[in-house]
Amino acid sequence: MAEARVGEADERAMSLPLDELGWVDKDKNDPEYVAKREYFEANNGIPGLEVFAPDQIEDITRVFYRDGFVVVKDALTPDQLEFMRGGVDRVIHQMMAHDKHRVGNRGSHRYSFGGASLTGHLVHEPEWAMLIDLPTITPILISLFGSRDYISRGGGGDFCLPGTVQYQPLHADMSDRRTVTRDDGREFTFGSFHDPRGILTYRDLPCPYICCNFTTVDLNPINGPIRQIPGTQHTRESIPTLAEEPEWMKLSTVCPAPAGSVVIRDIRCWHGGTPNLSDEVRALPNCEYYAPWFREPLRRTLPREMWETLSDHGKKITRYIVADPGEDVVTGVHPTMGITPVRDRPAK
Ligand SMILES: [Fe+2]
Image (cartoon, rainbow, N blue to C red; front, side, top):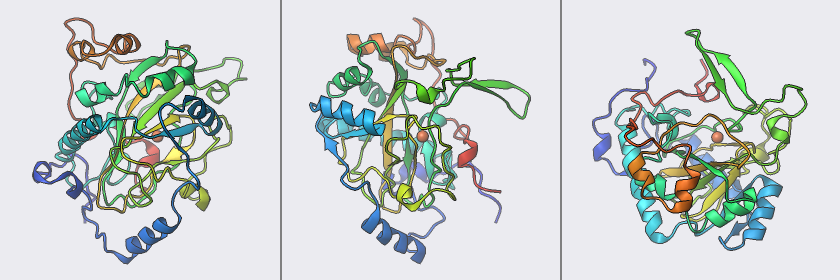
C-alpha cells in the first residue's frame, strides 16, 4: 500500500460526530489494543495525583515549583466547558477535512492545534480567547510568576483521536536559542535564551514559560492522558528516547482528572503524549504565558476585534500579540497540517 500522505481531503469528516473521527485504518478490537487497554486500566496514572481547587493557591504554587506541573479542577464553569467543547469540535472537524488517513502532525491520529493553524495559534477563535484571562486561573498565574506583569504569547494545544496507538517521545517545549539551516538553505532561529559565557542554560532559570492545558473530557487511563515526569524542569540530563524510557515513566500520566480542569505546566518539564485507545477524542486546548522578564519572538495573531472583547488585564497581557488597528490576521487551517517535528515523524 502506498504511504498515506497528509493533506488528502476527507469528504466525510464534516458529517461525522467528533468521537467517530478516529480509528481510521485501524481495528480497535485488535487483540494487541484490547490487551493494552486492559493493561492501562490496571496500571496507568500517577499514583496519588493531587487535584486542587482554584482557591488553594498556596498548595498549587508549592506543587508547581516542586513537580513542574500541577492539576487544578473547576478551572472552567460548566458553561465555559460547553463553549470550549464547541470550539474544539469545530476546529477538529475543519482539520480532519484535510487529513483523510489521520496522518497527523504529531504522529498518526495525533495533532497540534497551533501547528495546523496558519498563525501558529488559535486565539482568533472566541473559545481560545476566553482562556486568556479566566477568573479562576489569573490569580494562580500571578502567584506562580510573582507578578501581574506576565505576558500572553497566544495558545493552541493538542488532541489525539481515538486510535492513537503510539506514544509520543518525551520532550520539552522549549530550548536554548539555536539556529538551524533547512533543506532549502534558509536559516531559522528557535528559542531566545543564550548565555554567551556557556554557563547558564534555560534549565537553570526560574520558570520562564507556563502552559495551561484545559481538559474537555475526563482524563482517564485509556484516552491518551498527557504523561509528565515530576521534577524534571531543571534537570540537564538528556531526555530518554522511547527505547530508553523506563516503564514507570510511560505510566506517569495525568489521570484521573475531571473535565474542566487545567494542567498548568512548566514547559521544560519532560512530557509526552500517550495512546488513546478509547472511543472519545482527548483534546487539551491551551493558553501560554511568559514570565515578565522573559521573551521569545512573538507573532501578532490576535485580531483587534477579538482583543476588544477582553478584560483590561487580558488586553494588557496580550499587548505583544494583538494586531495593529487595520491589520488583518489571516487565519485558517494549514492544508498539510504544518510542520511535524522530527521526533514525531514515522521511522523510515
Ligand atoms: Fe509538548
